[in-house]
Length: 382
Ligand SMILES: *Cc1c(COP(=O)(O)O)cnc(C)c1O
Image (cartoon, rainbow, N blue to C red):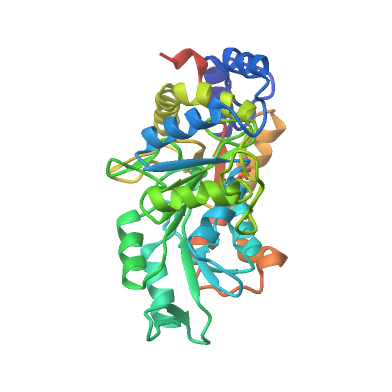
């Protein structure tokens, strides 16, 4: 099976060289926009591409506001602060995620609580969230959600793994019941829709990433998705909290220098123009993987019902950890890059002390999930 998978990947990418997991592709107006930015001298914190990248992203996602940031982690940090997360708070998130999700919680001097994911979405399970809250939380007299020992539970932070939307109807309902602000880590799910609505727009705030390995890239970059009022505050907080004035420097809180440089935004505008074409290409590749693996004992991870996934990273679920190890060894040895899903956050020494619910699905997936090469196939671009 592994040999036919390796042969298939080499055929798709028409290459006998090293095949990475996800390479960026620049086949649009990238050079034109970058040159225009350099010629304008507005390469840094001011410039028209930042505004355009923000308004184009807002229009694409249907978010009232989009605020560009230096990276996705900074976007998450600011989004959590804007959701009201502060020192000593707990933030419920999933154990199966990239470390940036939890680092952003720690930057707020808050602490993650880990709940389980669903096996089919790989995202936070609404049932696991409801169970942990029922067992560990209460609403105080002011309607604030608190743990049994009185800690405020400041937010719920699910993540849309590999671009597959989590159970948003379920998560929105549980968060509403417990008065919990919902913040979505949509770093991996630009272009993924749940029942026709873009991921990252269901909660109070959502965040995107444009790191080099994401579906589109600005080199490094991120975006905060929010409503009007929080969007305006997001812009303020991420641009040193300066009161607008032609020449005076007055800052009304400790702000952050998290603004995306115009040079990166220029790249982003060109990349965003290609996003739908990239997704169409990636969905064809995903279909081909699914067909190839149908008769195998590797279970291909497909988009959840009523969702359109961007298929950022293709993934399979092996039937055992031993099979996972064999797949990783066979492919990487032959120059076809694959990698396991992340180590669970509660298994990292930095977060080992954090509270957690039952993590059976997370443990099960940690031992079995492998990502396959997923770069856009250029010849499939319209
Ligand atoms: C990529 C990513 C981020 C943000 O990463 P940056 O590299 O800071 O842009 C956050 N969360 C998840 C799940 C990610 O995959």
